[in-house]
Length: 352
Image 1: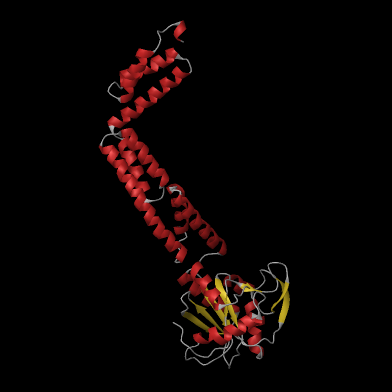
Image 2: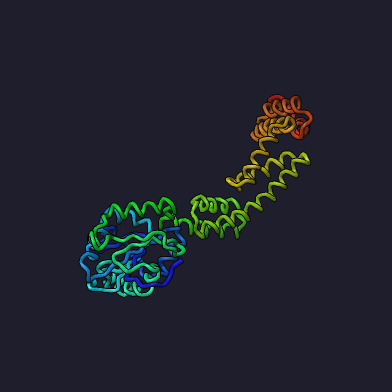
């Protein structure tokens, strides 16, 4: 974890921000917000520390951190900017409501007061016992452990001597190890699915509940939202298992039609869950039984005959009823067909 020591400044955000949207780093104003984003999206924090009074430090801010490839890569991080000085000045930008406001000219998504506060109170803790040098960059976990500390040069070669490609290599190494986390679109969709699952569960709509939760767990990220979905999905699985056991009990009583209908419902409502897969296998096994096959074939003939009867095609209906009785006499529908035959009018012109 962090240890308290002196530091000059800090940067953390999902991307770099500049006066024009998409042209620079997007900085977060406070460490609290940055850590919240890092935890809920599963992202790493990129913290950069610099000062204004040193030309080489300014060269890193004005050149290295304006590299397009580096800016693009930093879109996978939560970025904070820490600088105890404000000699770079401020600029006028439009806020979300279109009102013109003062912002830091280095980081137009925050105010100079923000990065000065970060430098004084937050960035200090990442130096440990190391001597203070700027500019320096930190890669920090969502739990605020420093994973890497990158000096942008030294006093001999120059503090602006580390090229952007070197920074990119170090950043990619940590991304490959930790993972890239959720994009803002993925995070928004995850929150919507969690809300949808909660509402669907309140209505006992298990199908919609399972579908929404499965979309969240499919993100496969170590973030609170996914962990919540896994927990809720386990609860849904327990409900599904009870329904599956009830369907199997119907099969054991040879209530074939009720069992098949119940198994289909479990399969459809809990598609993608273990109980749903088990229900489909059990349904397929039942359909392979000779007794069940004959029952379902007799049902098809019986329904066909009823359809013709309802349309006034009495002779065709009689033909199908007779076939059902002849081929499947022991079945429920063979017996129902016999009853239907006894109630049909005699054949001939008046029976059509």
